[in-house]
Image (tube, rainbow, N blue to C red; front, side):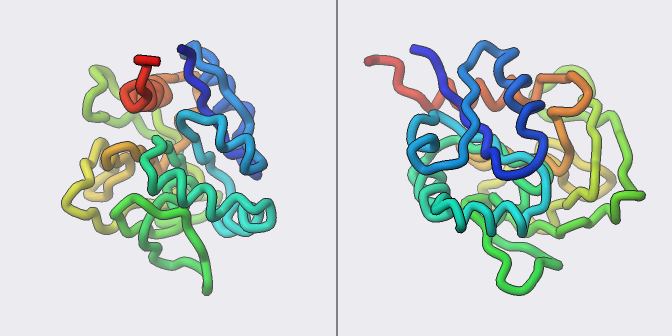
Length: 198
């Protein structure tokens, strides 16, 4: 049985995520409609602008189906804005900003600063033997984690990669720079969640 992992294709680095997933031998599907979401064993929510992605998801009748799939246990991997969208709580959000939720964290939008404050850093990530080259662009950070959340990487004191059960999130853009190990970690999470018995 092959895996199908979707990439929410409303805004952001969609092609780069599709290529990263395909390099791990899974079918990568762009998702813009509920019927496409239904075909997915897991979903990547890319960077972009979190408020815009949430609004577009609402317009496309995807917001509630996304919430339901995440609530029912579909693995999801949020990067940058995707981390914000998976968070249960946001600091410095715009009024009325909606999320998909499911990840018991508080995330601060644009915590590292504006576009001109973008930076790169080699991070130690729990479970990976060598450092990951991480690209931060108008990136959030995690201000508070719930009891069930594992912090996988930090910049200074701030968590920038977290995992809670079937959910994975990074402040940085793992689709940039050709290091596919974060996507590989997510593919293994999806593989572990799917019943291959028939």
